Image 1 (tube, rainbow, N blue to C red):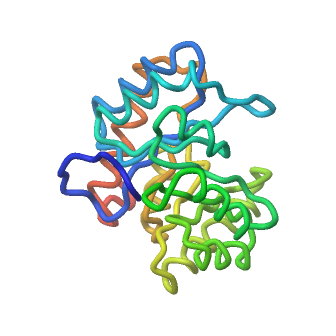
Image 2: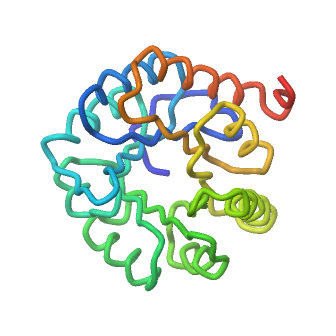
Length: 219
């Protein structure tokens, strides 16, 4: 994943923070970056909203200043305007066409990741299209969807070299599980409206889980 990262001894699975812009988001992102080694930040809007350059540019600058790559949800043109490192494409059809279209806007050095949903075919198509990572989430949030995500991550890690991201993680235990399943990036969701102290605790615990590696199991 392309980034402006400083030299860091990364754990095998790296931390990706997922944040919604809005009141307190800047303070929460700073709090998380102060206590955790953050490889990437995905800026994602609330459901039904669209991102704007003015609201996300401070988050982009803060994350990049901390050495993290920044990905903007879906909108490659916006990612270019705010000088983010790339774009995260949501699940959907025409995987190759959407990766190619984003690459045409952002250039060869940009990071383009795609949520494959629950589709192995979409994941493989994204890898063949040159995506920098493939992501798997939990969809409707059911226990079955969670189990499917974890199974997909384990399957992908055993066969393919393209990095994969575990999405929809909300706790250090989730991060620990993603690491154990072979995810390359643990996508930790920062709850909108949470206090900076709460975010710092969550990010710090997630960071420790990754640093401990598989030895953190049961900690």
